[in-house]
Image (tube, rainbow over all chains, first blue to last red; front, side, top):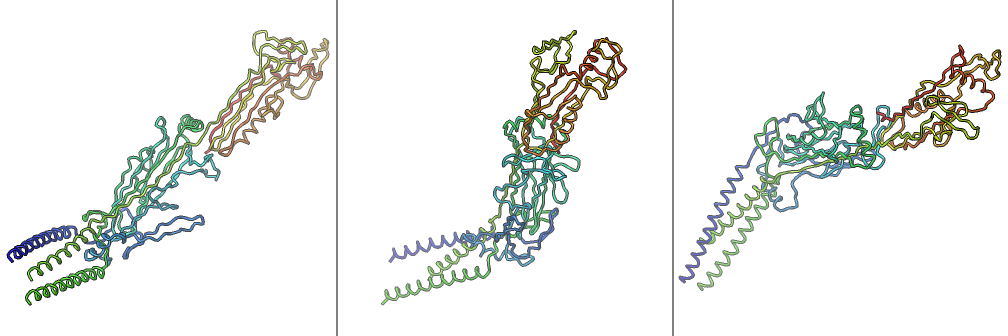
Length: 327
Length: 239
């Protein structure tokens, strides 16, 4: 009997330790949770243009230009994946934190980059350069003999691309560029300008152009409010009237089989803006998930019901055992 | 009873911790995406060449074994005379070749400049072939004794005096103002000359020219005893 009591006391002590641990854990969790809560405040963003008023969940659609000029879209809802349990639980738990001015039930991130022909993906080939070039009279003045795109004196092109925030939360993005020439012994006499849609120059100016390798210095950071976009234009040129002797040298080297290729890479990275005190009208993100209150309530209720059933069953069994012992 | 109460408390706390943890995990969920675009281009090929070859067109000494004729300059200057041509001293003529397959549009300019040409102007001259000072002869058109022949890839395309050759090159320039990109350029030209010997119709004129060169006769008509030309060929990209 004493041993039984001693065992019971040990179990009670352990249970008490577990309860204490859980209380501490829950306290810490609540403290961390409330320290990360923020409120949605719609603000204007400079240098970007409103696309739509994203009052509802926004659908991001990947589109591909067809030969007949139409666009073939792939519907895709830009939201957290529903396939993983943690995300699912996060969605349920996050409802209480997602009230915003428009009544959204949670943040839906969405981001895409595209030009007039292509929506960018992980590593997309775009048409910064061309296979052939025409002059003002419609005459093809430069054309590669094979399947390569070419550059030559007198060629130039403007490449415009758009960064779009199609979600309901603000995004921070970084725009980087890279340019390299395959032969380090020679320099390619191409100059560039990089502009934003509002006319601001990132590289060059109205009167000046930069060497193409200056693209390696491009590292622009900015923000996009929900439903807004930013457009950039890369303008490159190989002047027709330049150093004829050097231009001819490059052309002859190319004819002899030398590898003289210019490559330009444009890279964008977008992420949820984590700074609740962003300036210049950047949209502050709503953290958490857009979980349905109904799901949250149902699962909590089921958990409580389950616990009650378990305890009731155990109590009944304990009473039966007690009665049997006393009979 | 106490145990049951504690178990219930522990269970409720466990559920609360699970739910709170899920909520926190949602606050750490962060959307990050990146996209990249790339493009490359190579320098368009040029590789056009104009190569001149062949021997000099004129010499200071000629030997025609057929006619037993020998012509030799008094002062080693290059000369021409009836019966001479570039063949008489082994010269194959002035050759120049245009080759290449540029990936850009081009224009070719043939700038043939006639500095001067040998001719005897139309009019009346003393006939130095008869030995009678009273004899004379006349003709109505300028006489150019040196006849040039231009061939392209073996086919004759022009013949006559230097002006006739210039006319051909001027026409060629006009036709070559816009050659499309990726057009293969492959043409070989050969320029030769000859001063025909023994044509009775020209013996008097040839004799007059020779005497004028020697200074043994004079005339008030126009004439010239030298020839010279310059040929510049330029190939450039069209914008």
